[in-house]
Image (cartoon, rainbow, N blue to C red; front, side, top):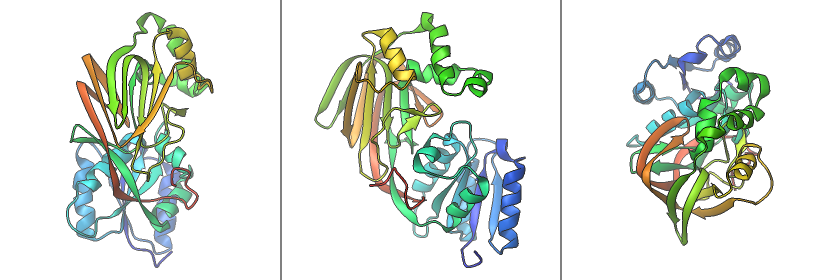
Length: 299
């Protein structure tokens, strides 16, 4: 792999003591591959490291972490100006790894690193919210978002995805839908939403397929609403990933606008954003990303 250009790995601090990753980096370096490693400590580090990466002239900036880390690096890359902007590589090290899993990125650090360095870079979309914040995977709102945020880590580790359903049933006393209006291109819906998924990618919350047909290179956002008129059935359909169509509203559009009479919170790849109005729009082909040749998120 000595013919491949240099890369810079931006590693979430939580993964700094990963022995398998350290071995993978050292092995590639022994083979002559130039890999710079930087560890994040606080918000804003990714942007500074990308500035450094451009000064170093690397071809790829690799995001090592979960969906939040990937999103932070991707957002910083699309804000870069000029030529020779590095491509994004992905090293999944988070708890959920929803975007990496959907994209077919290998779990093993050595395989993921090789893909991030040697894979073909492909132009993909990213979504922007209120002309500022971005997400590469999905924006989720409603009770399902609160469940995935509040479910204890020990319960997740012991039971996996079903832990969200169990915790949701325990928290039935707080189950309240969000009354809102959602508009898109040739689309309008108004009512009580238990869960809202607006996806560039397909899954969130550790494997919940909220937008199962989404693609990252089609110039569209995919919307799925789990309506809250019948709360208990909707909760089961949402958190147990039922194939039934009860309580479902779907749409696709280059943009969606969500308005509510009360404050709502959307989870943007792990980062919460609260407010009463959210304008989400796709930025087509805004980012180059190194993905497997059989990536299921591509047309």
